[in-house]
Image 1 (cartoon, helix red, strand yellow):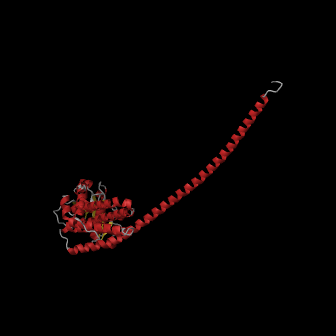
Image 2 (image 1 turned 120 degrees about the vertical axis):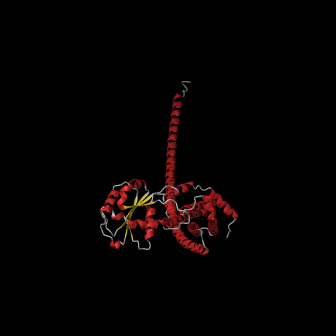
Image 3 (image 1 turned 60 degrees about the vertical axis):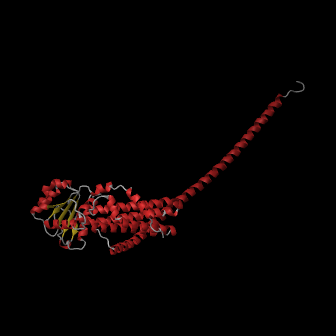
Length: 399
């Protein structure tokens, strides 16, 4: 098995330095306003969930504005400029007159996309709660359930405009664990797909060389961008080079994972795709989890490393089997379609050859008939000529 060389790290850093991170930095530092409207208890609960999370770095400006429902009409301008509206209410308690008046004003106010959270035991919630609130569009949350916070965090992340999740996680620590888990899973799956896409053609010697090189570049860039996003999501300063230096040991481990994958693919052609996919997913997953823990706490113990590696290996095996099966199914269908197309082309060629043979035969027949006709015409012309000569020949008396 090949061992990592310093040249590997040099190539890695060359690739990382070429990454353009300005767009990611602008995305993380974009302005963000989230308005939460509701009763006092629900506002306090949402605020606690969104702010309670890992916070190793100084906090950025708080984007969450909490507005009591009766006062919603006084915040028309804020609502109009907000990125997200969270309506959080106690579903087990009917609204009083002031609350109903505030809900009416809110329903008539221009506002952004909204997430409606109704708190309380769903079994105790009345069937009809308010004529101004569509019950089917609301998310019921039991504050006593173990997954209540995750339900709310997921609803907020899903309700944000596209591309605003990074800025929201950077400013609200409660969003960070789920945002980091989603990002890590997405990038790991993307790198596994790259491994499959480059692994199957690598069985063809001519295509294998350039794709193997492209594979390493793509995986490295994807991991570097993921790590930078995780750092910004955890509130770290935006200097890219410093963030990469902090996480160099983890990225170096990923280089070793990729070398193991390349060795497996090279030694067992046709059967190395599965381990290569597992390594691409697992290595990226390890990088993501380790980077998240580091930027959250600044500490990564050996026990934590082992736990992360075991979790990544377990997930990688399952994901690799599933993706490889899907790739084989897709490849089989593509092969069947290709073979069908070739069969049709072959049948078409056979038909064309048969038609061409008939045409040639007809041409030969036509040519033979034409030749016979030409010979017959020539004979008639010759006969006519002989007759003319015969008539013009003088007799002995005339001579």
